[in-house]
Length: 232
Ligand SMILES: Cc1cc2nc3c(=O)[nH]c(=O)nc-3n(C[C@H](O)[C@H](O)[C@H](O)COP(=O)(O)OP(=O)(O)OC[C@H]3O[C@@H](n4cnc5c(N)ncnc54)[C@H](O)[C@@H]3O)c2cc1C
Image (cartoon, rainbow, N blue to C red; front, top):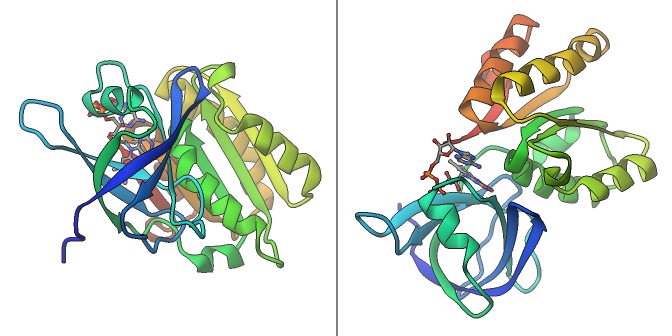
């Protein structure tokens, strides 16, 4: 059954990097969601409004019921360009939550997270939930950004890597999908030799995610055990 559409008010609008913006929204009715889930925004733009776009929750559920969305400015992108100009007090229509990318059971297994740019958003939500658990399984995160100043959550993740011995963070910077895939494989190849039972989680655009899923399958993972979320 379709979730009801409701209005949400922008409580804060902040640039996390020059081209990534965070909106904290207060929906009229609280949404019960898990890390990895997303909401569907109905935006009053495009040739046939509303334009529907999906955005993952970047932070776990809060007592006040706020939703934190984080998105990059896609060149000529109708939806992200509209969202970028929203200000405190503006409203947006949304429905959800949706999706099955992540589940709490994942926190029982070593995680291999591979993300490109805002593909890190649902993994960030998962990491926040993971930090709150007492029994932490190791997490290995490879996060690719398009430029040094576009590495999302970079200082937060560096701090986590320094303060938490089971969290391993590999930031990479490259601007094309092909180079991003090649650089990730360079990091993965030696890692896979000594880690056999990790749970892979891949998130980003299809030209990034699909070749890496293929690589992991050639390395011995079954297709169904590789969790993917693809954007665009
Ligand atoms: C389940 C799901 C969750 C998502 N969560 C997020 C999120 O948390 N943050 C976020 O920034 N986006 C997220 N997206 C992508 C988002 O829904 C939009 O596709 C994106 O903002 C581009 O919309 P647009 O209208 O601006 O661009 P469009 O006019 O639709 O153009 C999109 C084109 O731009 C390219 N592109 C470059 N960067 C991106 C990008 N980040 N996402 C999609 N396409 C891109 C693609 O090649 C694509 O063909 C999610 C998508 C899905 C399906």
